[in-house]
Image 1 (cartoon, each protein chain N blue to C red):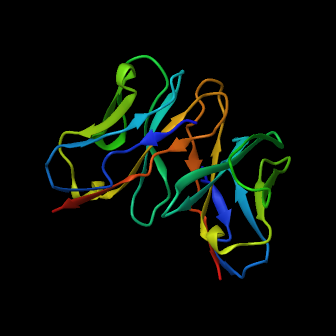
Image 2 (cartoon, chains in turn cyan, red):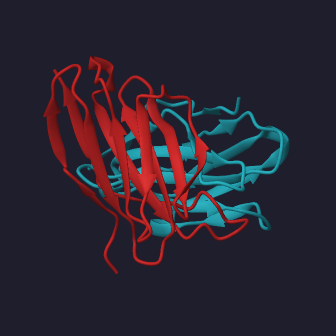
Image 3 (cartoon, rainbow over the protein chains, first blue to last red):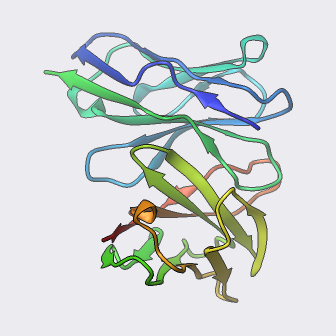
Length: 113
Length: 115
């Protein structure tokens, strides 16, 4: 069965620090890749997505992610975090053909002002 | 454009009871998926409905069921509730554009507590 691993459960950073959250998946076929974010008190929303093409994708709020097929990875990055980035971040994989997403366990990001 | 609407937002039930949760997708979206979110298991896929047909199902017991109506609204039902069914149940809708699946719009969820 497909699985998604997020290496960090809780990350604490100061404002302006750089961020990288790891994500690895197990499925060997063609996949669609996503990062979803859940801000405190808000619903889960899409941060960025990869379907095909350029493996470096840019999302909202200055986030980007790089798909490395050989490493089955889709790490999330941001050069300079802000206090408002405090949230829980979920990596997710979709095999295509249906709307089933397999989610990682999530990474809670806390930004200290 | 209105987002995904889930009702009720909060509910408390006792073991053995059943519960029905409702979801109205974004206008024009014909796919509705349901997910269970718990602290221990994280986000787990329950099922997806498209054009009133269940297209995919996760690894949940038969007590969990759902349906979709002709206006794309969906309901999920959990019968014979167990304590472990306490969770946030999330509904998500999508346009299900071929090849670009997985891009979901989530509702705020229905938080179920089973006592």
